[in-house]
Length: 371
Image (cartoon, rainbow, N blue to C red; front, top):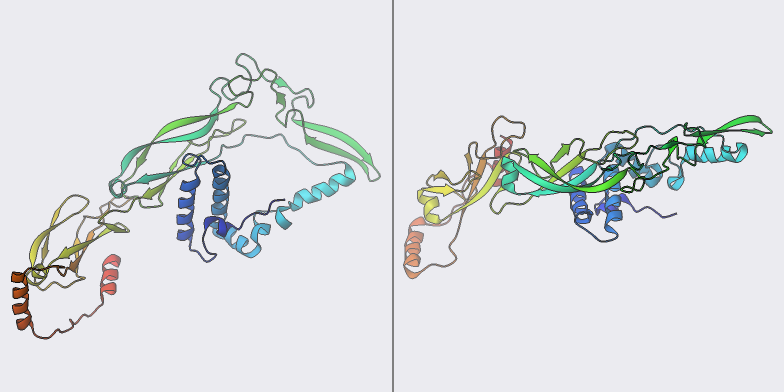
């Protein structure tokens, strides 16, 4: 029996990792090993392993159970090293009474959900966009429409179970008479058999197809946001409903802007003269250049707020702000005339005096973001 790897090792995170760190690690690895992007033989198995680890570690209750018991406690009714306790008792019972178990005919089963990682730009996340993606999914066969039989023919009733999907046998033992009900081995519990398989799907009733799907990305989404597309997953079986498609968004970093919630932070470099005398400048925003007045005696680290220049609120009703942090730049090279002016200025300024600040830079930045 193969030994299952530790879920934390699979995602490459420590056991104390936060939910957000686990999510980031999952997104990175899922994108790297997704079969649509990685054609290596082991990629599909690795992708399955990554999804299994994330499903457990992203669920607080399952993660707590896993932290305490490891793979032994992963799943209800599991015993040592994945041994199914209930199945174990069934095996013991079967040894004494010839497999006296209960089988039920299988009903409709919902199709599997699919996941897709989509990269978008900073601006696309802020204002929304329309995207086209291609996914491979399992659909009902286009020729037999999921029946599995050649068009014009129908599945036949299973002669082994007479269409019930179950086989009942009476067995006698020293403990008395027992009725053994098992799933029909010939039809697999379907109650019917395919006598003339569909040439398109070879009797499976399913086929894999690549589909292009249009996605509307709403304004205000952030890195890690997820969009659910109902009914765009794999087809169900035996009349079951279709699964969903979950699109996880990865937002690219911007060259100038940083995002904090719905606010945007921008670092504005200014020179000594602008800081001392004040100036009218233009700063870039996601809407284009915007004017900003720098008052005299501005110090490095001062923050200015541009109202309604941030990211639109995802649920509607306005936008965040843009916070502009001023940074006074010391010139790396000066000419003779500039040197002479600075020397004259230095004589008039006197000794350096540390500015008095009621709050440090970190606290002022935090106050603005929490306002």
